[in-house]
Amino acid sequence: MAGENVHFEDSSLAERIRKDDKSAFKMLYDRYSRKVYYFSLKYLSSNVEAEELVQIIFIKLWEARYSLDAGSSVKSYIYKAAVNHIYNCLKRRKIHDKFVEAQTTGSDSRSENLYEEIFFHDLEESIDAAVKRLPEQQQRIFRLSRYDGFSYPDSFPAWPLGEDC
Image 1 (cartoon, rainbow, N blue to C red):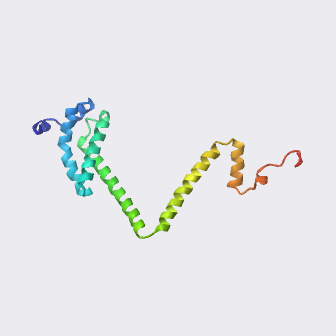
Image 2: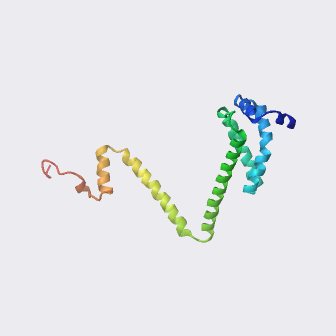
Image 3: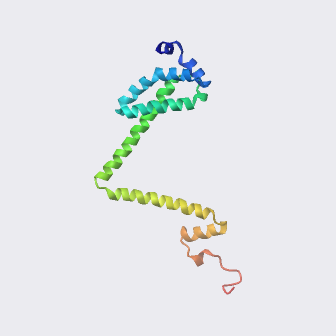
């Protein structure tokens, strides 16, 4: 099988994969999966993550097979996808490490502030959504009373016939 792999150019394999040829996909997988694995292992330092990366990249390649361009380099596509995935993994690790550090150093106030910011942002979005469902005049009254500092009586224009009506 490895001898078959050498006989086909990446571009012809890409063209065959576009036509749902699973054997061409397997040849491409056999050609690059180990290389991508060892490439990613250098950066991720985890066998499990490197194996997962290979699987994700080739699944995405198969899912995007109809948009493969036989004229462009499949190898470049595979390695660019690997680099992007490695970058995202390392970024997630860094965020995770900062979170763990914050939790272990006893900086409860920072995490509490973060929780309060998230809660406040969600609350603001909920209020805005509820206000947008109100009729236009009620939206105006709400904004005047809540955002512009008018009290309820100040928000309403004077009645044309006087206050007795």
